[in-house]
Every structure is written in structure tokens, then in C-alpha cells.
Image (tube, rainbow, N blue to C red):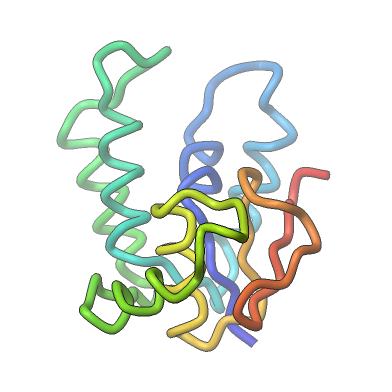
Length: 136
């Protein structure tokens, strides 16, 4: 079954911070899989965070765009009206931000049973998608 990868997986894969070496290796292992799924939103978030001028080591546009092109080998969920509707149906009562709910909606739309993310509640099942923190 396909697995959905959140933005933090992409960001850890390029980290050069010594204290994030284990996370970097785990993130790269996830990106080596053939069953990963991303969304346009995740790729957009990656670009913004990775090129942010105030970040620890911002990437150039060319480098970030090259990584995104490489990750287009994965199945990509577009931002669609149906994703927006599903995002709105996953109520704020779940305690997630709108953007996190949009990631969950994209994972659900692609039929992913698991969403790999450090930022969400490990083990929680939302809309049939199990959230997995791969860095635990």
C-alpha cells in the first residue's frame, strides 16, 4: 500500500545539521521507496521552507527546483476542489490546522493507509489514514 510523505520528510532529507543525522537517514530511506506519494501542497511547502532566506542553510531556487523535479517520480496529488471539500469536512475538532487537514485529505484521496509526518499525532487515525511519526 502507498504511503504519503509530509513536508518534514523532504526537509529532513536535505538537512546538514549534525543533530538531525538520524532523521536525515530515515527521511532518505523513505524517499528511496517506490510507494511514496506527495501532493502539490507538500512540494510547495518544501520549496518555501527550503529556500527561506532566514533559514539555517537556504537552498538556491535551482537546487530546490531540481529536488522537486526529482520527486515528481512519485505519484503526486494535485490541489483540487475535492481535496478542498474533504479538508473542510475534516473538522477543526481534530485539532489540526487547515494545512495539516489538507495533507490528510490528500493522503486519503490517494488511498494511502499511512501518512508519515513528525508534525501530527503519532498513531492517530483520521479519515482512514494512520499517522506515523517515522522518527520515534
